[in-house]
Image 1 (cartoon, protein in one colour):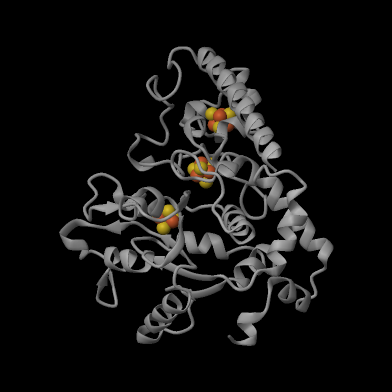
Image 2: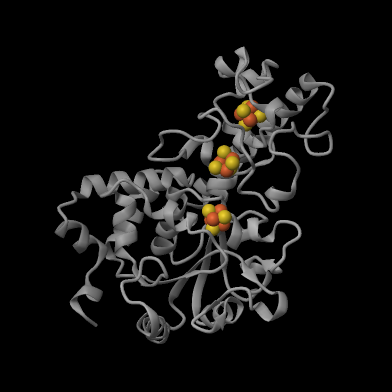
Length: 354
Ligand code: SF4
Ligand code: SF4
Ligand code: F3S
């Protein structure tokens, strides 16, 4: 093992001049974002500081590179990037230095040396139609690569809605037979981090949890980490008071829009979308779609592309009554209360277990 591989995260951070206090603050923020009690922060800091480089094999299939852009385009140097710098990214089509046969050899070597221990990150869906011929890398179909690499993985993290649920490539009529990772791999722990693209901090949280506890975080029925996908956008939206008062923008340039009223009637899908955008936000907490004046498209939900117009209000079948927004508001308030109660009970349970 080289000195580079032997170095722990604690040694790496101190070599870079990062104080223990700053590192603890980072761990406290990650723990809090995952609804873990504050007492977990020092445990996380200690465990992370002892961690050696985690081998990561990143597979990019039928995708647009937006997910990779999202994860890597943070302001550097940030602690998030330090964490990502610290993992041993042994294979990535866009970021790996070698190319051609050399990069394929690097993947084979990482798989052999870290068999059973490496983490696989996948962005993009997997085309299955016609034997998977619609996306191949170095002469191998995506589906064959996925099966081969997943066989020796400790766990798989899907990044983005394409890998988690099929995403835009799976949109009707799905010409390539695009499928999600968990439609193909059924015998490995999988965590889905959907979003088109997903939020970088959510990936950091999942990775920090895996490095600290050696296991994936608590997941919901769609394999999404509950800490980040437990509440809907609507539950945490800063425009929610306007929704509850029945104050809605009717167009994107009317008085209501200028006053920052709720975007439900111009098509916001926040009430049926689960993601951390309203709290974590984007670009270092600067903003998120609704704050920028556009309704949520529901990009972290399965089949969001095929669920009707982005600019039509949710229908009766999807959400409340089209005739009575007040009734919808009451339903919304009820669901908000129920979601808050569920979040509290989840947090109490975690605290008791902690
Ligand atoms: Fe691109 Fe969105 Fe798919 Fe990510 S989830 S690869 S951003 S289309
Ligand atoms: Fe926010 Fe959309 Fe809910 Fe209105 S409908 S409160 S804009 S999430
Ligand atoms: Fe996507 Fe809605 Fe967030 S469109 S980025 S889940 S606000």
